Length: 514
Image (cartoon, rainbow, N blue to C red; front, side, top):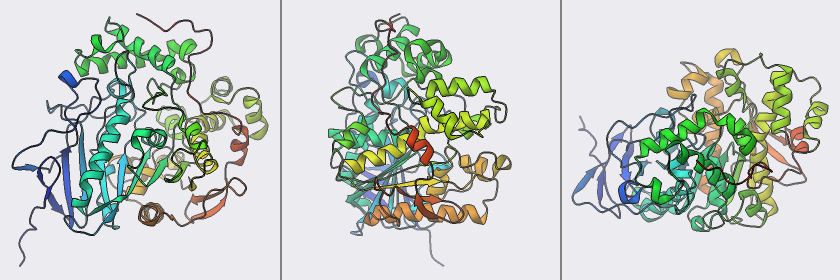
């Protein structure tokens, strides 16, 4: 009889960590990659973690960063540990402490730039690690902590947290059996939007070789728009929107102020436009330094051309929000017309939708335009921009429908995450797939997880690269196949739209103040 596996120990640049073996995989949780961003470091860029003596136990996830409690669906857990050590990484390795040099997959979570945690069953990296990769997840600041734009504060602190985590990977992952020269970042929703930004950021250059952007949101903010949102947050506290005034504010109080803005965000519609109607008060900011330009503009200009890219979307992205709000099948013609006026591209966009989808009922029409504006077209256009700039891009559509709720969810937002991770039980997977995943779910998961890990290993996910003339995309369905863009009608409607930094509504006047 053999005894229990010896707990693995790894020496990092800050000190030695001890993880544990779980079903043949070495797992390390809660390793600090930066100091707690509180006290003198509140609303500051990340600072490398302090070294420690002895062996640090790395068996529990670090505390969750401050989360929006007002978002509703998808709201993250509140940190009740009392610890401010939010900036930590987690590693799953099938072969730690060797010279195996396995490909590395680094996950960046989504959550509308308002919530997000590396904890939970959906993001467990064991299944992907068993495919011969080293998997890394990490926590970063969100909401006002990560994206709030305040005078005197370094912008895009969440993106700088991500750069710091990737620097930790560069400096440490070889000790866990990973290859620092074969790092692939992958992320969904806001995580995919962050990846788009990282591709355009000088600070992130050289930190990853490949990228997978799943359901990329199209929102990046101008400094004027971001400053106006920041001023709205500060006004809830009765303070000016400056680093000097806000740095002493407790993170929970700053979060609550942002939630107060979120709770009445539609009142800002005349100033903030689409982001108010979509309940998206935070996004990466095109500040000219940390993020010099819109990711789509940057990629077209050739930035990130040396990074191979997979970009894609789920066919029925917005259906999740329609179903979960209890509005599926109940959208009125007036509501659909309002959605078209707000979210279709300017000029003849609304008319083009009506002409291209004449049989669409109001619910279908609203889902179409929201899916396109939120995720489908930004994802497709990111692949197109990267190709135009000289990069190699692959595009995909997830078309396999979630079986839950009688199948009405379709291939909805978030369905790709448990399929890619192979975490088909617990958490969001149970909500979307049911208590026991079907053989089809297992097969689609095998196809997506296999493609992502093959891409991380050698750059080829198993289908043709995206080219402007052919526009070939992989369709993940019960029978995966490759075909020209399945959403050609939408692609044509959005072909001339420029995903540039979003501005204050023209005529909104000077920046909002308390």
